Length: 223
Length: 213
Image 1: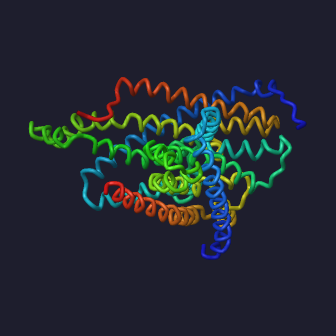
Image 2: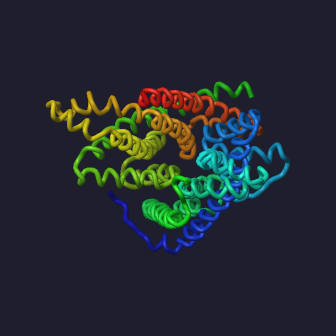
C-alpha cells in the first residue's frame, strides 16, 4: 500500500464538515417536524376516516415506502419544477422530500400509537361530554405521542442518515462537504476515515440523548 | 416515452442483477455470521456485532463512496459495478446478521439443549432443530430487507453503474421530460417492491396462524 496519510490538508477544510453536520441535523429536525404533522393528520384520518380516505392514505404510504429515496429526491427537485413552472433551492426541496418520506413512515408509527390507547379511555372521554375533536386532542393524542416516542427517536436518527442523500443535489450538508474535500484535495482515505466516525458518533449521541428523554416521558403500555 | 422502454429495460436488468447479487451475498454471509454471533463464543461475537452495528449506522451512500473511492487508494482496482455490489453487500449483511440473531435467539434454549442431549452434532442441531423453527421468524423481516436492497440498488447510479435510475436520468437528459420518466421509474420500483411486501405480509399472516396453533 503506497498511500501516505496526510490529515493537515483535511483539517484546514474541516469547517465544511462541521457546518455540514449542523445543517444535516437541522434538515433532519425540520423534516421530522413537518413529517410528524403529516403523519399525525393522516393517522387520524386513517383511524377515524372512511374507506376512501384509508385507501388513499395506504396508496400514499405504499408509494413512498416502495420507491428509492434517491428517486424521490430527483422527482421533487427536478420533476416538480418542470411541471409547476417554479423553482426552489436544493435545501428547501430536500426538506420537502424528506418530510414527505418521514410522513409516510410516521403514519404507521402514529397509527400504532393511536391503537395503543385503550378503548375504554376513549369511550370515557366521549361519555363525559367531550366533543370528538376535544377527545382527540386531550385524551388520545397525549397517550399516542408518548407511546410513539421510541419510534420517533429511531425515525430522527434514520432521517439524519438519510440527509446524506442531499449531496446528490448539492445540499451543503455533511456528505457533500466530505465529497467537496475529496474532490478538491484527493485525500480520499482520510476524509472517509473521518466521515464514518462522525456519522457513528453523532448517531450514538442523538440516540443516547433521546433515550434519556424517553425515560422521562415515554410509556410502553398505557394503563 | 415508449421508445425509451428498451433502454430502461436494460437498466432494470442491471438493477435486478445488483439486487440479486447483494441479496444472495448478504444472505450467505449474514447467515454464517449471524449464527456465529448467536451461538459462538464472546470473542467471536463482539467483532461481528461491531461490524453489524457500524454497517447499519452509516448512510449507505457514504459506504458506497468509501468503498468506491477508497479501495483503489488501498490498491484494489474493482470495476464500479463490483465495488458498488461489495458496498451494498456489506451494508445488507449487517441487517441480515441482526435478523438472523433475532430469529435464532427467539427460539427457546431448551431446544438446543434437547438437541445436544439426543446427540446431534452442531451442524445437525442447526439443520434439523433450530433453523426450521427460526425460518418462520426470519422470513418476513428478511423479505423487507430484500425490498431495502432493491431500493438501495438505486444508489449505484451515483458511481456510474447504468441501472434503472441512471437509465432514467440518461433518457431525461435527451427528452427533457423529467416527470413522466420519474413516475414510470417509480412505478417499476413499486411493482417490484410491492410484490415483495405483499408476499412478506402473507407469509407473516400464515406464520402467525401456525405459531398461534
